[in-house]
Image (cartoon, rainbow, N blue to C red):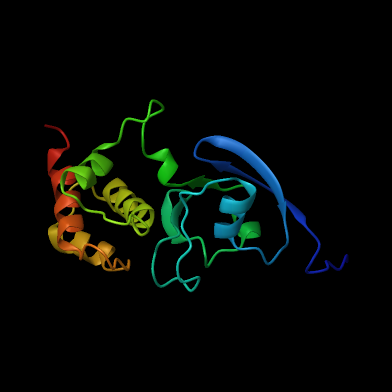
Length: 164
């Protein structure tokens, strides 16, 4: 058996927003830090570093999760989607992002990427969630600027606009 030094860097390969990427990281490096520092995915925000605020939420294999609670080595081989994956290739906002713009559902925007990713996960699993389901998902995020009404209203608008 080979003993690995905690400071030894290991190769991590994953798909980030549809693009295969690879980099080296210490085994204890958090996925949030790997995505930001190694991959340049600065839309992944780091707030509390304890999984409480939700700013760092990404989709890993199409499931929302806190990248500050996940080690980068745990994401080896995974499909990671960040907020950068939501807009079209030409920068056109998706329906949820457009609804956030329309309803002024962000101010400083620090929490917004994580909220968008959690709502994207919810809508992918249930295209027509009830308002209380949206409230529950949004309640897992801390926003100190807007309150949550405009965020929930934006999500409901996007949900209700699908198929029109």
